[in-house]
Length: 341
Image 1 (cartoon, rainbow, N blue to C red):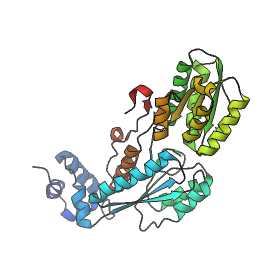
Image 2 (cartoon, rainbow, N blue to C red):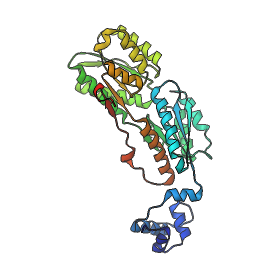
Image 3 (cartoon, one colour):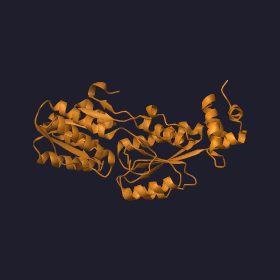
Image 4 (tube, one colour):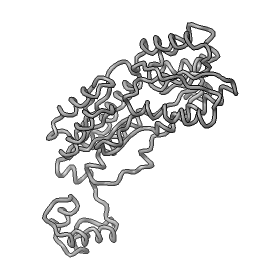
């Protein structure tokens, strides 16, 4: 039989009420008593039934996902996955609210964080912008005891509780290795397009990309990063101007979104068919570009895994249970035309 709270109380020589205080980390218990209870828990292999305990206490969780608005297809998928994960988690008394915020706008994100009712919100998941306003807003949330996890783009120097997303430096290094190998020894320049260098994921991808190009493919030169604001029209416009001005471009790395703009430019000029192109996220447009040979590879991350992981991590932080790092690791996925799911 599984050990019970009563077994823990008897083994520790304390009352049931004392065990309850220790398990729920409430004040009023001496350190020596806490140590006896925790030793009894470890010795007996006692595992709390958190679902039953939360049901008995009528505990519920209200998590808010702050996700950039706009046409970014991956962000819309992340938004939908958060909503669907919330529906599945409703049996565990989890409620999910998805709130849009303007992309790349630290002040707007900070206002959204400050507007949260800390008496009603249990935890927050956000796609972070690296700005002083966001840092200060996250500090205020931390002081209020509200855990916050970052999605897709991290801000490790800020008061966030956990990061959910791929290793973006490794993603950039992967993109450089793919372009360098696919270029087959040709000399030339690489065009780089980011959404904005104000978000850490794009900065880290550029950093990883540069590391590999400089060390392993010195015959390739990286052009300055263009910013497309993750918008298809803007991305297409800046890319078209770059390719018209730079005849030596042999490769293209789209660090952020805006794939539709890239596809439009590449489709209009047959001369661009020889470009080696690596982009991010397996959206319907990227999938089509792979099939048609416009893209050589797409680096992807699982939006559904990220949404579910954020919910699990926020619950674990609130319940005081360990985060299973292996379960929450978000993998870098590489897709070619030949392995499309």
